[in-house]
Image (cartoon, rainbow, N blue to C red; front, side, top):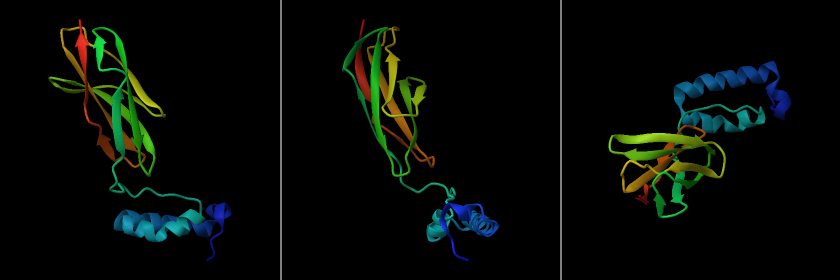
Length: 148
């Protein structure tokens, strides 16, 4: 059966082929999806086959190396991935573990963090990039000095 662009996606025959390939893809994995990619592209339909095994890349920077307690400091992350970036989440590192501060879904990925006024002398933050397939990578932790 010939396959012809977006019109095909609305045809019953193409939809049956797509459903068959989707069912097989879930049973057989990524190799089948790769082999069937041309058909699915021609039918203007995509399928999800799980992780592509390629984690996103991410780096994090702070606007300055020190901040006064109680004041805000902007952290900016650069993230990229062949599948696209879904979100970048920002975490503060506390003694009890990471604390989610918030996330950003559009470039530039950034978050303003208020420096703690509880006597701490440092503020440590890292960012976690999640790509459109769900793979994740954490940045290196950035630590800034907190002054009273």
